[in-house]
Amino acid sequence: MKTVYSFVRTRLTRPILKETVAPFDMYVSNANEVPLNSYVTVSPNTPFEELMEVGTKDIDAGYVRVTKRGLDTTMPTPTENSGYRNDHYTNDEVRGDINHLHLYDASTAVLGTNNTYTGDNIHSGTETFNGPVDFEGKLNLPEFANTTARDLVFTSPASGDVCVTNGVLQWYNGGLATWQSVGSSTPVPDASETNKGIAETATQAEVEAGTANDTLFVAPSKLATFYSNRKASQGEVTTGTDDTKYITPLKLATAVPQASDTVSGKVELATADESVLGTDNTKALTPFS
Image (cartoon, helix red, strand yellow):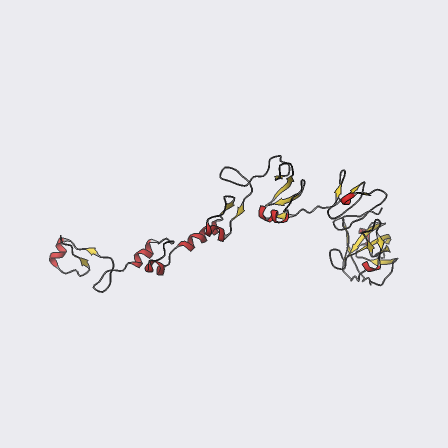
């Protein structure tokens, strides 16, 4: 079985035509990065991705020898297939990455039911292994902003599923039917008034409605917007028909004008002495005065 090297990363310095048949020399920017007798992918993670087998190399001349190309990895042994060939261009990436190569070795990997393998091998995608699995390079986990986003993807989580939720590394405990933080036997609870835990920020619409459950929390900016939306305008105060808004002292004072002989409004009562003098036309008289 060939070896897939996780950290093979270089680029083409000359194009490769779809019609070119192996063996041929593939010129790359750093031939020293490509191990002998290995698999590499040209133009990885693009519609033109192609798996090739390389043998010898000439570091000074800047090329590696491609012994097979257009490899079909769905076969028990990677097999050349002209339908898998593509054109590649100068500066296209050349990489050996276990994240997307699926190599099968019939001498050590035994295919069972439901694509379950035993033995030493390198796989990609969703596979089940009996025994330890060693990864070369990095392992990327799905990451979610909150539990709602996580549950939209993991609609039926299986025991052992792993992801990152709101910065917390979690695994699904099938026995307890709940997500737990990695390294802890205690499930990560929803946050509450008495427990630290996972919480989700309420949307502005949820804050306005005021009916969402207690697992949401309100951000200061959304709370400020909520109160701003509840403040009555001067026109609403003057109209006096909205019973859902609050009134500030300034708008209340502005809404009630000074009374006159033509306008209803606020007045100040005249004292007994002012009533006798009869010179202030802004005061109101009472029977007593």
